[in-house]
Length: 248
Length: 74
Image 1 (cartoon, rainbow over the protein chains, first blue to last red):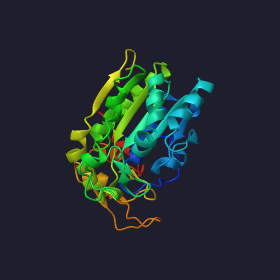
Image 2 (image 1 turned 60 degrees about the vertical axis):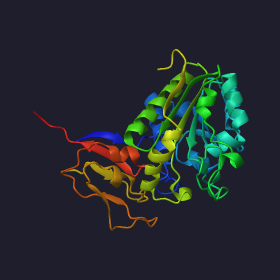
Image 3 (image 1 turned 120 degrees about the horizontal axis):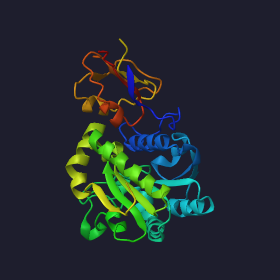
Image 4 (image 1 turned 90 degrees about the vertical axis):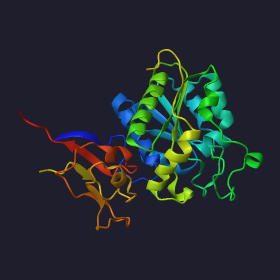
């Protein structure tokens, strides 16, 4: 019997604290697999956000720090400038990156800092009980938009990769999804290219991962996967938005 | 014959994503109960498993510890 898949060694033995069916774990596994494959585990610093994944350092065994809410890119900038030989990445959710931390993210991208961001977009603030976030879809019911998100009252969802792709600083910007094996493999390739961009010192790289939140969407895990395919992916199309020469 | 899908039962949260994605329907939620209080998934039909690894790819809790493929000798 030949082993074709095995849990990567960068994943610790501690059980994840996420709800059943939350795709945070899939994103962790992809990142850990790539750290294993590239041999970067020992020299990686991951800056964890505030949100559901705040305890991420329990699950991926690398050096880690937790930034103040939204400030992961600012903290990663400092780490990368002081330790240019280390591999620095941030792992942020949509409430963290797209709402309170949008200034830090946009300016880190505009400066072209050599850091990588993995951005989990599940359309709400998961940890605090499912409030509306910048990436909540029009008409989506959350605890702070009980009649659905209305454009005249709450504005429109924010497309972070499309916005950052118009700048000169970022080297690699893409959006993947975690709803089926095909998209998971595609997302892994995107993150691999983002890692390459940092290793070649080409500039800022960001990969958005369209994710699920079964608990706050009030759905079963299987229903939430189907909702991503039916409602979220038409609004947030997948693909690469910016890739400078040298990223492959 | 060894099992093709090895499940770490303590990690499973019985979300059912692997059962949903399995193209050959060889996985199911078992009657056992783990220390967290969930019913872990089990491979009940090892013969028909095609070792595609979809269960491993979609598992959010790294509960599918290993997927193995038989080696055919000529």
